[in-house]
Image 1 (spheres, rainbow, N blue to C red):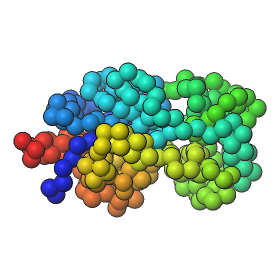
Image 2 (cartoon, rainbow, N blue to C red):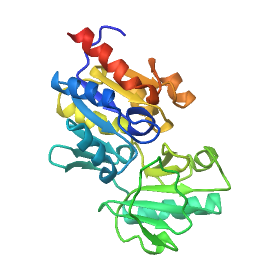
Image 3 (cartoon, rainbow, N blue to C red):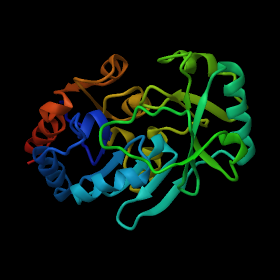
Image 4 (cartoon, one colour):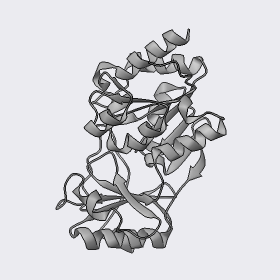
Length: 271
């Protein structure tokens, strides 16, 4: 590691902070606690909504902020107050989803609504990590029931597996809307510019912390912007190849307590 000063730590959850079975290692918990005790700002940056991030924050007991839904919502974890929410208008969301259907053909949709609710079509197939269960209203056609702003669309396109659907939709959605990898197998449609990096930038600015003073840990395609933005980027050995290539350092895998190993080294050096 270099001699940069680090003041903020950002952790992806699934595949990074958490083990593959969804559990939190006591060693990782201890290391994050020690970092918080030494004055580091602790942020969970995840594709999960806050309702499914909060249990991890509660287990840790020292989380300052949550950057949720890959940057669409930023939460002050100390009082669960939303400090930033970036949603598509109802019309933007309807137009974007309709265009995705038109371009991809057989598509099933899931919406994360700005009011915190979730709407899934019956045919939507999720590939969420172990233990992640989202309470969603099940409908035949999501477009017929959307009644307000939408934070994100998840697009289940079985005829276009992997990232092929992202490639088809890129540059072809309505102005101000973009598609990106969600961190799962499904693409995600959001407002242009919304990412984990945008959420972290808001928090760092509030604390007068430069991006060079942020250490970010991730493993997936939805972590790329964050890893490129942070001054100290750590990818997990179990991560996607593009994450490994984007990061300055590779940590041991999540199941080998990789986050703890990096933090223990950081804290020892600080002391």
